[in-house]
Image 1: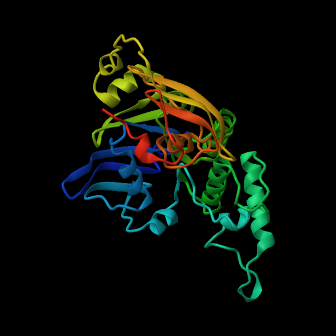
Image 2: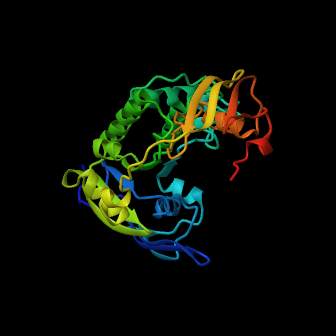
Image 3: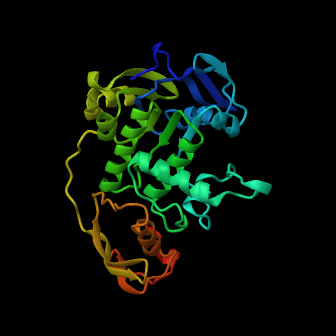
Length: 334
């Protein structure tokens, strides 16, 4: 679905932005239509974040044009972008933890009663109404402290809708979500499309782009490479556009055999942080340590290196056991 005259709600045309000698954006282009989820992809450093910050009013482009409903606009700050109906949903929202969900939604725009008193009942009622429209359940009276990343993003989306945002930009929203939370987010995006919102969805996960988006824009080295309907693209063609060559040539498989154990982690435990972590790393191999945000990956790495102490278990390098909390002993030796 698009606007009646087939005109985009928002378009960025040939935008450029430099920071000193660094050309962060050479040719930024994107068009966002009502009722469309539009994917924006590219490698790190492709210029996606700079493009988003121009839409958000954080940066003013050095050249190019930003059009809203066909009329050129200039944003000198984020407030102007928000007033124009643009909302940015970041990967890790920053809510006020000691305010309720409803208070976070209406922060800075609280409805008032007589004598300029905040109308808390109206805030809760309007927040609950938008949650119902999106088909999700979240208590407006709940404190923001302890909310999952997915629920924090939901609060930000509802905040955008209560300010009548028409363009919603989601910057890597699924990076820290479980599969169930991703499904819920996709359902919310479909609801936003049905409402006539334009959604710009930024992700490195191409399967999500193909599942959710109707069109895709690819950027490389600060430049617009292509914009096409998703149905006309394949994962391989998008990767080729992102990196400039086929993936097979980018990371050729090199046969190798794992050698002796260099690093041995055995039942490593730090009370209340991680428990019973064990793995080996052999010479000539790459071992991935994966998990969602908050799973303890960073804490395990800090303990292995010796920055943090552990309560039980052991770490051995080249067969020599390391002392807890000793970074000097944990340094690699040549």
